[in-house]
Image (cartoon, rainbow, N blue to C red; front, side, top):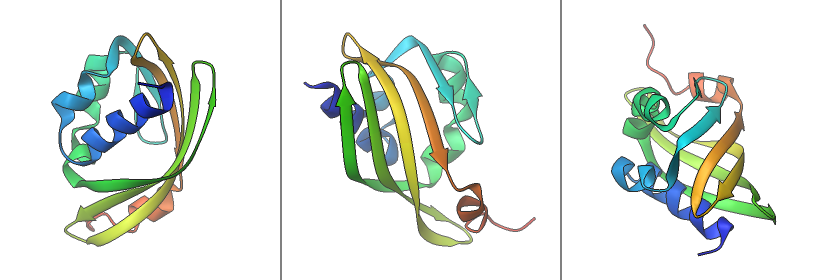
Length: 120
């Protein structure tokens, strides 16, 4: 599998509710940096991403760029919450080594996400 394919498989598993399958593609030292969650390892990421996984309903990758171990993906993250259904455009820069994600930096408009969160 290419590095682009590894990221795609990870994202598709995660957004379809197969968190265990997605976790198989993360290195133990996986570091994550996003607008809502920062994690220094795989266990912390999995614990912190429970809410995102629960509301995820799929994804559509719009484009990917690969430069060695680096993969940059622009995709639509499909979610469903009690407040509604929507799509949030996201960009994620991941480093993949030996078939596993070792780090990811996620960027998205938090206002678009907040608009789909229940009030309260």
